[in-house]
Image (cartoon, rainbow, N blue to C red; front, side, top):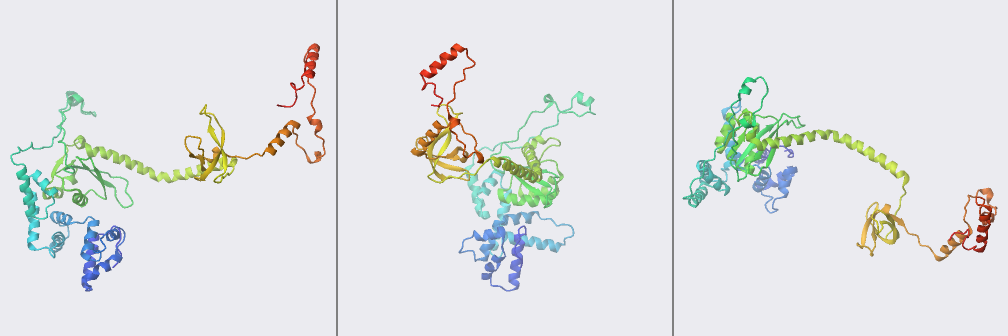
Length: 486
């Protein structure tokens, strides 16, 4: 038997496995250990999540797999009640299919005749109970007809003497009578004027989730790789929760195939609002409504406001799909962006140099001054605590608001300690040489003393009398007019 593949029918796979096990006369105690190596993906996840003590029991393993794939007795019941014979199918084939659904729904191999009878009675009892009572009883999930009858009695006794509430009937908008102007200009497009509109009759407010839902179909759209080109949109009137299901076609059997698992998950609604589409109003859909006790409400033609909730979500969904169409251009945009980043990086790195600092090393920080936030100066020294990232360092500065802070490497500069001897030597060099000239190889023996001799003051631009006065002052106060800086 091949491995289970994602997308296959788990129910049919299990049925095929059981027939093979019976054909080869495997002991049922070995079925679980023979099935587990064939599981993959979602099915394997269901086995992994089981209680270890029960994971080797085939019946418990089967139940866990079906539950993981949302295959419950309620699904089989709905399929049993809504089955139709497709063209070309023989009565015997239809009988076998019905019998298989019945066995999966009722499990006659483990339930007695009395228990099966209670299940049938429970189904019929729920169908004939009043609407509010049926909803209340179903919320308590009775296992048999006796329990359901007791719950219904409790509901009846609790609400005895309570006057019945007003019957909720859907309100429809009637088409307003066309004005004389419209009749006279019937060949032109026209819209209903505000003064001619009928009064608004809102639908009753729903407080129970999934008591009333609305459905609509979006499409045809661009066909996906898996063949889907339609979307069934379902919205809950109480919570405004939307659900979207991809479809390959809009035929009624396809819709029912999607709706039955949805109802099994959230519960069967009491009312479904749809438009005038034929697939929503076919005989098969009406039969499904009758079997499940659902009231179908149709909007009037050319008046989508009645089903405004789902129509608004349709617009949102279409906008999302429009965005999805742009995804095919995203790869090209990303490629162009990568090229631009590469070019920008190469241009920027032409004038940079790699710098690294070690923990404990002293650095200067380029920080705003205390008097002006837009002016910065090198402050410090501070100690590097650690390298926080490729170009960031954590620096300790206890005298500031934070004891440590992470800074970009561009704001850091190495601090170089200066000895007393080197400082004195630098000051002496400054005093003895004010000019620096590039020395070529042939100038190594040139005497530089002539370059630093004091030069006489240039006073030719002054009158002769003032030149003599200024020269006298220069000679009298030489320290004040020294050519040496400082």
